[in-house]
Length: 433
Image (tube, rainbow, N blue to C red; front, top):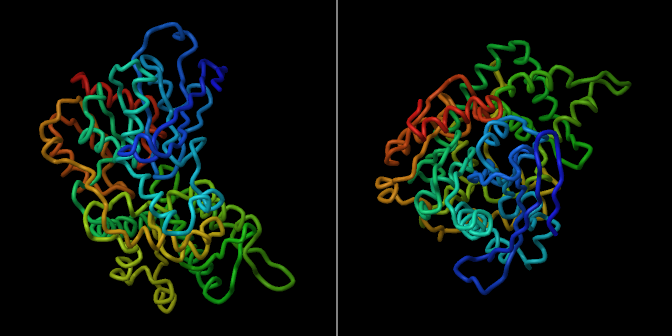
């Protein structure tokens, strides 16, 4: 059922689509996709070009904006916008601990989830584009993992694109997951050092919390087991524009004195579980390393294996000395599935995905070198989530791609910078900058 409604300055329409689960078997099983069409209220009757937004992740539905928030306001000046919930996310056919048992056991679940990478998402876009645009090309805006999808789009179906804008999402074309994480751990170490330079009082606070977790079993209100490794993973917020401040405010009220002594406060536990739980985005944990799979080498819990090469992240060794505790960043580990009740039933499924060795290649360097689609990309100078060196190497591979390398924003620059970021990148696709 299609529903149209209003928010301040915009008209919204719910759009629903049916696509094949496996695009190589168009007569087989289907899944549902949801997208929200947005148009400026004073342009409803105009024949506008389309912009489709691919959210970062993997595993997150599209932004739920109110009115013309952030970059959307700039986009609505000249486009109708389609905010797509990629397969398995948002209002699209869900994939989580509640629904995946419908597929069968872990092996069947893993086979199902193997079809939730960038290649399938792009084929979804091409399947629905004729229904949305009448066959006309559209512009794609890809944020983070959405940028990975956009590079696959340029590799596989550039005929569907009028232009492409990428924010913090240029992947390496050939790096194995091990290469990705070997580059990532030094970046997060730099981010942690910058955080402690800003908030030196947090050094002792973080050490105190880690010491408590090494000597006490803590279960958060939602059933999440808060181990010291899980606590360290809160460093994922440090890649955002406000992340350091958010982490500081979390740490400053961690303990409360009770008749039984000092314990982790309810307020701390409530906020920590909100940051740690994958209940709203389980696909992120399930297929995060799979987005890097492109050859016969399994990812094999890459982030966890590579972490062992960086002993400075070992909390017990840190606390045996007097150094600062290091937080970690964007990584998923086997223990993630043991700690999080939203993931525990899916541990074996995750193991099977980690062992998979038949991932098809996602990017075509030869086709990218012959690219004719106008492309612009924002590359953040010390992006915690996407390696800058990998991004620049890929940028040089894509013919005609124009870059904006900046240290003004963190990875969430398109949200924090809003209209200004999108305006700059659109201008680059038109040689106006």
